[in-house]
Image 1: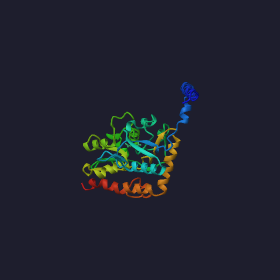
Image 2 (image 1 turned 90 degrees about the horizontal axis):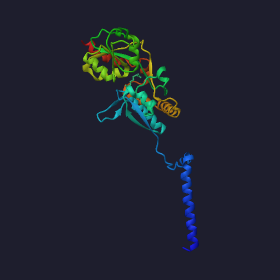
Image 3 (image 1 turned 120 degrees about the horizontal axis):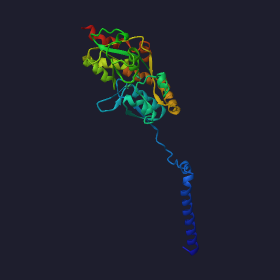
Image 4 (image 1 turned 120 degrees about the vertical axis):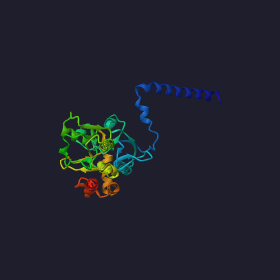
Length: 295
Ligand code: ARG
């Protein structure tokens, strides 16, 4: 290197160092500037949305022997995500803290057989409805209960904070000592089996599934037309319009292309149209009352 080029080199180096020092200093005032230039990783991985679900609610969401979260709700959300080109990760989340987890941002959306209610709509935004449901009463096969009103003075088990809880609270009054609240619906049903409560009020799909899969419990179901018709939706944090739009588009797409019907048939047999009016069908209810009939 000639002396001149050495000098030039030193000058250039000094300028560079000064530039870096300046940049470092200005970082404080203009913090967002480097960040704005930064989005270098162009091939961004698909966004992974964290989905909260209380996986003790078969056939909608439960854990299989391998600990995987499976069910109708899970398949619906997976199909919606596949259509929309985003990824989802299901995280088992106890029902009691599930709405909080959403509002704190620990979960991006919920799928948990969540009934859309006016009260809940004040604190969360819901997708379009994706499933029709109604409360259903489970009692022992020899029970005299024939309608919801018969539960007025009886011990009734419900899952805390569910629409079943709301229904019985309305019937018995909020201070009633006869309402036994459980952290999950299966626990309430176990208590019915053990004789600790006289009835359980819960979503029809879950009650029917339990009765059909626990023949030994000798339960029967009692439907009552006075229960408000319910619809499940996918809650997102209030104001998360971007995700809500994706979910609604995905739901519309899987309904249009037959994917939804396929999933539905896999879990409930009859296509949704046939089952809709009957508020989950005569067949399983009849099967459920079989033990009583054969007594
Ligand atoms: N549909 C009822 C409600 O929204 C019960 C839902 C309970 N879901 C669950 N995965 N435990 O209140």
